[in-house]
Length: 315
View (cartoon, helix red, strand yellow):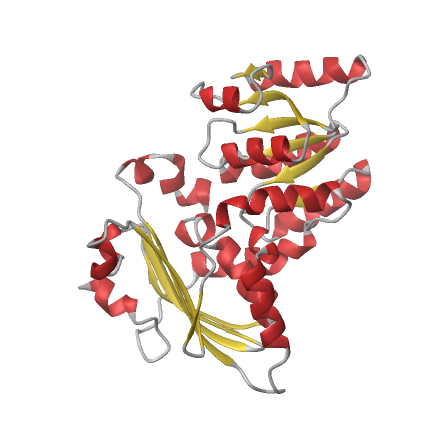
């Protein structure tokens, strides 16, 4: 049985980490968050210690290590801008890290983290969960079998509505979250790279605090993408059925269904890590470079390369 800590226990994604630790038969020893709305811990690890002060959390972890009961992993689900600092703390404390997406906000941080791995001998594992989804793996196989020089035409649409709270939280600050493409879209860009190869072109057609769209060209695909937090972008027929989210990936006219099993992928990632696999720092480089470019890019005119939702969204 491995011993875990969890940083960011009050966040939206933290319960998936708690469930993954529980599902894999391991123990959450201690959790930390500056917010104390963490009653969900009782559903998984009611005996876990909890701190709202990082210094007290750090002291507890060090005391456990001195007693010979040191931690094996720190799961990091804190706000995006804190990921780098929390990973560095874990590694320098002699503990491997499992970090939620996005791993970091800036490409130059990748080499810094690799150097700290080398200095400490510890490892950073990352949550690139779509790489383990059966439908995505099947799509990757199909893409690899395409004739040389052929490119798939892909439309990626992801609408996940959020209330007014979103822009008032740290997620609404580009400096803290990286913006919508980073906070909401980074694992989709990683998935596209995983399936279709290297990025060859990256154009942005729309960029606001609540939605973004653009065009990405890969070795084996031309991709029009659209992300939104606005429920009004959900197709009317879906909204009529009470749906507030919409996820679609259409490749060469064929829609890929990958909604099912989405919430179980954290457990698969943990199983992979604990069996000696997992995805490391370097595997995040292309996605982080992609979102960094999207964040800073000039807006290009809308045209035939833009996602069909762009014009509709602007009305």
